[in-house]
Amino acid sequence: MVRVFTDIDLDGLGCGLIAKIAFGEQANVYYCSYRNLNQRVEAVITHPGNNQEEIFITDLAVNESVEKMLEERYKQGKPVQMIDHHVTALHFNEYKWGRVVTEYDNGKKTCATSLFYDYLIEHKKMERNPALEEFIDLVRQYDTWEWDENNNVTAKRLNDLFYIMNREQFEEEMLKRLNENKETFTLTDTENMILDIEEQKITRYINSKSRQTVQTFVNEYCIGIVHAEQYLSELGNALNNIYPHLDMIILLNVSGKKMGFRTIHDKVNVAEFAQKYGGGGHPKASGADLSKEAFQTFVVDIFNLNPLKPDTDRNEYNVKDSTIGTSYQNHLGEISYIVPAGEGAYYIVHKGKRDDQKHSSFQEAERFLKRNHASWLRFDQEYLKQLSSFLQISVDELKENYNELIMNHFVDIMNV
Figure 1 (cartoon, rainbow, N blue to C red):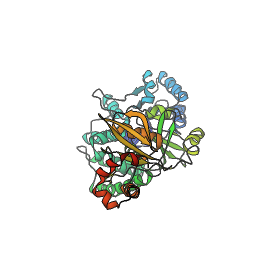
Figure 2: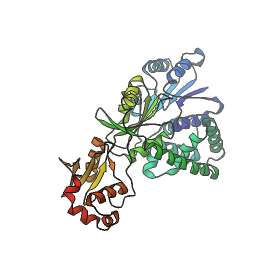
Figure 3: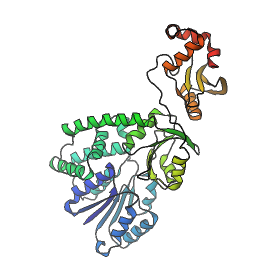
Figure 4: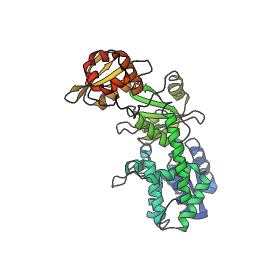
């Protein structure tokens, strides 16, 4: 009998799928979370009847206590192998039974599914399967977000399908497909139709949550916080792109007592941040349990904060990086402007007062403004209405002579 302990996400299921293809009915797969992994592993390895069973732990890391038990098991000649790709699990490479690889020699990021397949091929425990290898690479690209860089939508759609179907149904369907057709892997027309409908739901969900995100500082990090129970990867990535001035997005599932951490910034390591709350994962995507301490920080302390407002992309007059200045506002009603200062530099006028600090680009100035004042780009309709009232002209007249009027009344407008 082969026992595989693996994660509950697509990468974890990929490991379970491989085990069932390689070992057939001899494979006993346990889909675990960080909450129950240690208990389940300990229960199996301490039972005398399981001494000769092969034990695989993939895509998850056990705690220190079970780690020592596994080392003792290995020393006694009992089969055990741990396979992972998370940076937070690299210390398992100190053991002969540990294999933690974050990148291949060619620079591509790994996933547990690809590493488990490599291991079984290397040890001649299964034969190569071209269709399975296509499936594995889709899993790898999604888990590492390489699909986003390469615009490999099929990888994302495979993950979407995994969450639409229940795990048992998905596993059964993929197992049947990969065993029957070993040449190539594709999604069916029916699956693609279902996924088209699902993408529309995801878009609506993201639009809704983008208006529920609040901003705060935790230590040196400027963080966006939102309550969410579904589409976590898509939502986290989308919110990071909608609000790029934020260092990371924290996705809270209070009922499930879980937190997800997502970032798009290379200089921010959310795996290290998650470790402070007993979690871990990837540098750009991690998770942790929602502890009492975390609940105080991310729920209670920010309860009275107003949500951010996304910038509009439909303005024709008050546009970003304008040669005559760009206007912003926040929930306190404070008006700000980002104004070119010549030679590629920019300065900020906040509440009628010019900041002494110069910024080397518009993006840098906007990042500073948003992080320190939680401001958003003012909508044309509201902005033009205020200017027309101040200048005592009609909105139509303002539109016809917009640049000239702004330049002629620049100093006065900045103080409105």
